[in-house]
Image (cartoon, rainbow, N blue to C red):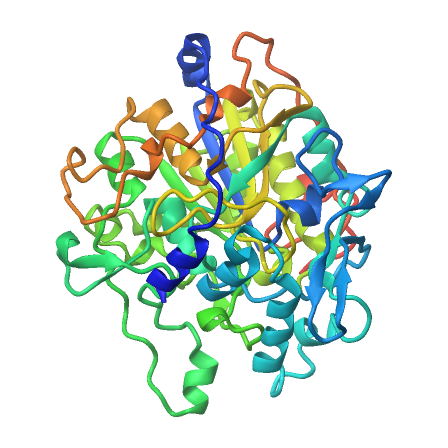
Length: 482
């Protein structure tokens, strides 16, 4: 399956090489003592910022889209359209769907894939919001939101940095994306030896609780614990004495097994390793006795407000606040705003860089062909935001980027440029390449002006529900709790 996908994606054009930051920018990177990566779910760039001024958005003439995608069910070609609905259905987003959506660079498979996903997954789950959200009317994978629906996201873009060529690092779904986020690879390992690991773009070993409802219904045992024996970024951080934390919101998990369109998801919290919480299954994390660094969301709020953030933080939501269809865009934006407000209210704001992105495109339309870097990616384009007192103001970054750029920034800031490189990191594994050193990959240091006076906090109102873990200081105009 992986090789077939790679062949199908081969038609994707290569992106322009990223701009190299100035020496001053590289020197100034050490003013950042805290990096926070907030990872949301399943939105393409065009679906959130396709009409943002100055960005590489939906091609238009006189305000009317000039592109369209075939609708096999209706025999029509559907143009992108404004969709103010808070709940969307989206479409399949695994390796096969990625190849079909891209379709050798034609970027025209989105509606067909949504229809295939509905037929395959909604027969027994007809009442699932993912199945009912797109009943009748236009296929919502062609819908886009704007500043009316996403006022805070657009405000962050206007006042800080919007990245319009941020690509998912892998052409696949949530679990591989999060494995790439923390380790630059997705693999299956037959033993505890890193050398036993083999590339697995679609199906790395699954956590035991994944698909638990479906497996119980068929009287099957849970999946055995996976072996993630290759090297992850926390290994380098721990070896260098750099603090880190991975924060998990309690609730339901936000994706389905093997790219199913709809399912009955299992629960998650910081003590349940899963598709969004893979670090406890890494040999390095257990051997370094760092599993306790995986913490509940309440710890993040407390550390942010109290000035106790670690050097590196990753924050992941529960389903309700993930923006993964059928989660509400309003709830997701409120939750992300509460995280950013907590950082801005705390003493660590003056030395923090916040990176916000969405783990994959969720089946939603995007018009930009992903660059081809190796057999795994890049995947489709997703939104990216940079928020920091040193971030440029109102800047649209056109560099070719992926989540690999987050690892690269962290390594440059805290590890003197050490990479997850089998030839130098002390734990050789057979990963295909060193993703941080891909020549197409831009440098996030270009999004900062380290000579500027640090900018004050920009607190935004929280309009929407929040998790129970959110403290009173960040509730603002929150309407309800989880």
